[in-house]
Image 1: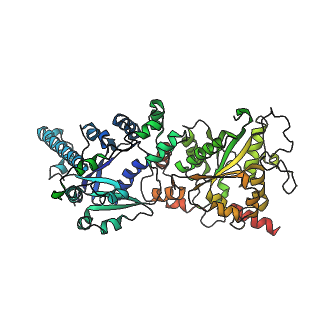
Image 2: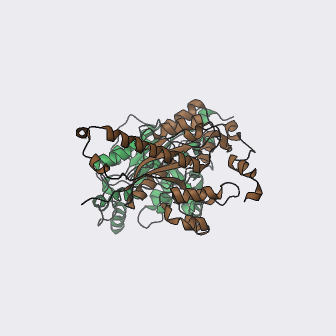
Image 3: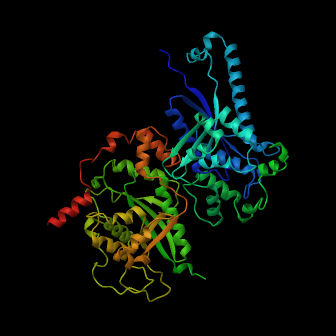
Length: 271
Length: 282
């Protein structure tokens, strides 16, 4: 009897990661557990994509550091990695484009594997491959986020409507919520989200672990301990490079976020 | 300007099951230390994790060997927090106040060896002592010479659950609570918006010694309870980033925490409840 094969799934988290915290990494673990328990998916990879410096958020330190810290934090993870593509683009990139990029990359990888297998001599193929001779299941890529992320869909000029639609329709969301927040409510309040609610996975976090990066930076500026909230290797890196200071927190002060800047210039007649 | 030599040295002691130890337990120490340092009056020189003995008979409590080992793995990366297994190696369950006395005496005279008989209170509770408002030292002699630092202190570091547990009938002896807040002191870490202040207000004893009960607000909500960790493990869910990596690896390797382990002591009465009930019978 052939076991129904699970759909391979890649989780992508976009964010500032300024700095990365234990909570960011927990989101991945929670999402993976939840998706596995549905019986439908096999999570193959987790990707953390730090935002481009051009995003213009207050206190955002250079992507070079944010990527380095994420790498240190994820050293001990065997399935989550950090990807610099988004941060290396010339300008800030809309989330939907990051999703498209990573999805296309996963297809490309799948394709090149198929080519590789085709060229191998039959004897060399392992027994595993007999299953993959059948139609390989296309991977899915879903956006991993917190409940507050859903709320941002409502903010004026932050998102393009057609992007939200593509994100929930074509890709899907895995949304981790903490006690006290009610993501089902946000979904209910949006016709678009309601239409694609089957593609929005809500995961409840029972162990409250709200380590906000903002509070971490606050503690660091005041010389307070952040041990056990972020990995030791990240603390050492921050200390060594003196990354978070009063000055760093003032970066981009008073500036508009890049998406808001861009969408303001859109001709209102087009809405 | 604060004279660094006038700061009182403090050792922070945490008692508990540590079943298993989590990042939240470790955070308590960091928060307590930062808080005491910011008062300008204290210098925290050490943190001690003292896992409770198996004789405590709490439901789901696995062997002290494992709990001590995990705590040691967890504190490997710490320069000042360590694990002490004196309490867990006793054959009987020990009241928290005895553990405080033990560590305090060890602090004052590190070379002497201690048996259970030696662990008597420095001042007998109930005896009236002159107490100036801002003095915390438990030693009888008054510190006349300004060049001599006040003696080092041991303080209990805990969450609000410990203070709340003072109210559970037969769990604590009244005289023990008095001795803890009078002679040693508590650093209690709780979530913002908690009701610990109300708790202190509603207790005459705690109110009387409120200067010796330091309340620290934890702004970063960090609710990583051992109970939840054990539940997640039974359900095959990940505990990564909630406990140190080495602890997670140890648990996995030794397959600790199962439905069977959670059933341990299920029919047994908790040691302090048993003891206090027996004592009141006699």
